[in-house]
Length: 252
Ligand code: PGA
Image (cartoon, rainbow, N blue to C red):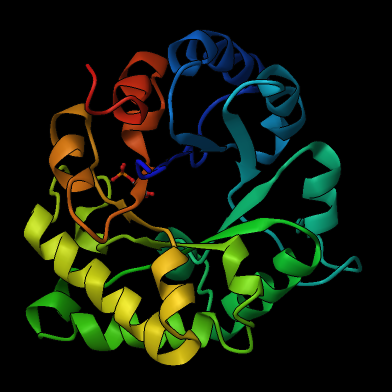
């Protein structure tokens, strides 16, 4: 059976409701026949209209963050059940921009992962090293720590609802991409960590996405790597034609 890839867009803080709906109108016909899964992490305000527009298509709508509490006095935060209520089916957690600019710790991210799963959301958990960590030869140590801490207490069963995304921070929004070889090595290492903790079957079934300056020009080679099961795309997910060239990789 051909491998089913997960091609995910991460819009970050881009697109109004009108822009989001217009994008999905354009993307829908372009991805109608894709054998892959097409995920879009959209701004909170666009979740409901985007989910309505995407209904009945291969496009799955999700969010980019949530809080670990069910409700309460947390001004400006949003709960998983609110995301579900709006039509989100997944949430991106632990993105490096959240770790870096909002000081999210592995422990906090782990609490969010647990809560998201309880709320019925699929989780895309992001891990990745900085340029400095890479230069210091600490990539594997960082990946191991982020995986073990981020997924602490998650059962093998629950892991079927978790997607891992390896995003080297030095490759995000920089135009720098990890070479397919480097990406493959690090994906393999991530899978190894999951295998040691949760066993062969869980590790084999886990989807690990690559993120960091994925574009139509480099997607084919990246997706050919054994341990790469999809992509998490920032900048190149903002234009429907460009994004569809990524989701429909291989047959352009
Ligand atoms: P990029 O972003 O594709 O613009 O590098 C990826 C991400 O941050 O998820």
